[in-house]
Length: 68
Image (cartoon, rainbow, N blue to C red):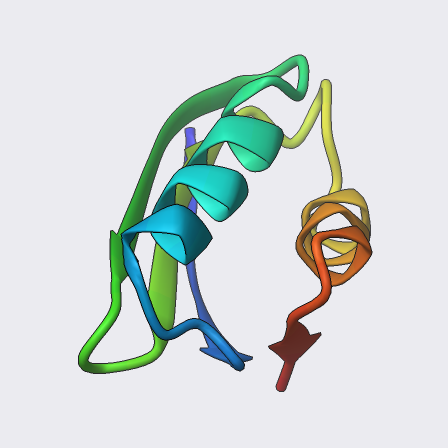
C-alpha cells in the first residue's frame, strides 16, 4: 500500500469531510481516507496498482476543492 498526504483547500465543514471521504473512498484500490479539516489535509492509503494519485486528486477536485 502507498500512502500520500494531499493539501486540499476549500474544505470548511463536516459536509466537506463527508464529500471528500465518500468520493475518494468509493474509488477502487482505496484502503483508507482521512480528512484533517483544520490542517486542510487528506491522508490516503491506496493500492497504486488499482488507482493513481492523479485519479485521487481529480476525484477531490470534482467535489469542488483545490488540491495543492
